[in-house]
Length: 382
Picture 1 (tube, one colour):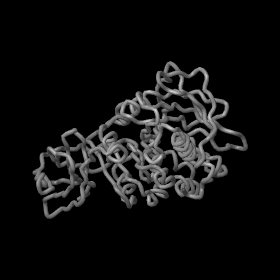
Picture 2 (cartoon, helix red, strand yellow):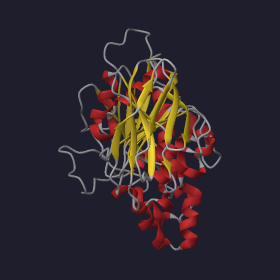
Picture 3 (cartoon, rainbow, N blue to C red):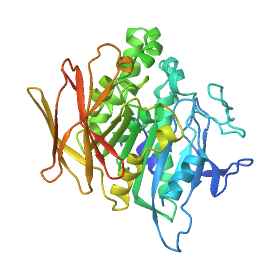
């Protein structure tokens, strides 16, 4: 782990406390001890669930689920992964608790008495606080502690635990991928680094002024940590994501030296729930590393020769079609219109290629397998 955090304190399983008044079928509601904040103790609310039907002595893989902005610990997300044969933990990283009925979108959630620092954009104004009192410091530590808590369960194989996160949770997952090498894989959804290149976040950072903004980026932007990521990483996003544009995404994934996979769908919506939590690519990616499942196709080469875009790939399962994804537009990434054209596919030789339409400004290739899972090449600006 990176020495900004107290390594040994995060490797040990944290103390667990009951969470009375919180109930969900098949789940354990709990608080676990976080790191001190402003000299006082903190606790983190979490849902923990195990897959049904585990035999005595049987172990299962696990996954840590990291919510995004406006989110909390979602019991249904834990239940989804339990149904897939995984132990799962979802925690609230902003000192809040889930409430019945669910808090309406955009409304503040209820903080509990031992909550740590408020999160997301509130972290910008914390930049003058001691590092150990800032939100990203706490959130990353809370995620590492969630791993330790899950790994301490006798039903969980501690060598088979992954992580996925949505939006701001993808931001945190990106950081964790370069901080805590115990995770077997990482799947950021939408979230990435280079916040200075994301208009949705730059508008909150710029009021800090150049010096304080650079201090925040130097401490907490995922670009600082991604070069240290050693585990396999899958990024899932859409062409027009309003929070994390494709240029910031590409700058982020180019820092990853290890096994990298992309899934970029046209105009994939941004959100919690099925939108960001349930793309089948995440399930398949996890199974391929933790349950010997058939992996996603892997693009090993991409070339643009004249007007022809060509990718070469390896695949254990059937790739059934290939599509050229392209735009003729300029300007803000989220405003561009994207188009699809069928590409020539040679499964036996492992390649796909397509001629680019006139005036194409950006292009990439999608491979689709028999599970309707998408694997994308890196986008190219012309």
